[in-house]
Length: 372
Image (cartoon, rainbow, N blue to C red; front, top):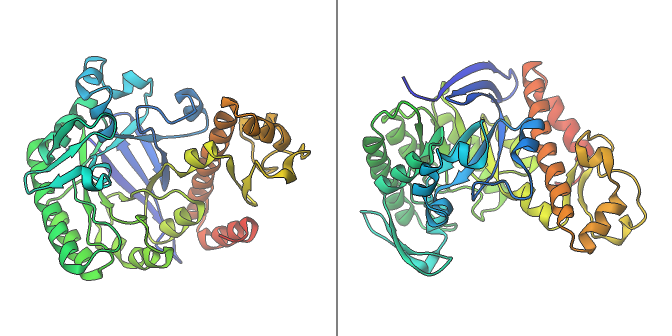
């Protein structure tokens, strides 16, 4: 029995949207779900207590960053990532593959793994499929991700094919060393770039290994949104219907709804927290760039339809003042709002699927949100 299991509860009659439930050693996750990103064992500018209060069910942490600092051995000594960061909900850890491959000239790929230099101090390191699983095992996450090679966009067919074949070999090595860990499950990552037949090839190879869940990697890496939607039109169909489907690195409201419509269950992205620190809020009427002069004497809440702590207690004028004054509270309040907004959006999405009115819900959201 895998540590993580999935129950498909309902399918939308007009789209591929799905309602489901994931069971992990730390509880249940209702899907579709957005996962806040806690790269370095913290979701930036917000406490775990606040995340729990707003309904966050699972957060994502980063293998690469935690390996470099403070080190997975230290976190294991502290009792694991859950105890270390005071989070008793579910945790997914990525494999570090995307971060390593983003280093460009600072890394070298071989069949054995990747040699790279730390972005922190330039020290030399080696990350292999076996090492990635060892690190994630020490962290104690509920869901581990297989170590994959994430090709850039654009990339030619020959490179993408060789890359996905290596990802398949690495996935098998990850699964072999994982060896049916009863406390953690491992998800496979489907690659193949923007080539339909290569996506199918990658999916077939990984599905044969019978992972308890599957992710689509190599999207939201710089390609136009039309191309990403084109891949999403077919790629989820290559993934087992009775297992969770995870789209990596996506977190804008339109991407979430478009992904849900095409059968995706799980999403993560640093977008809501990053743009919050840059003074931008997601609202039901579109984005609000709080530094704009238009909000200097605007004493209304960020979003009149939002019931988050920020919107209940503070005005746009005050938030603009905090941002212009470079006060830390600006990042904290905007981060709280943005994460609450996306978690609430997913809750409303689940309700719409349950009532078989997802298409109508999506249209009404877009009508209010304005230009995407």
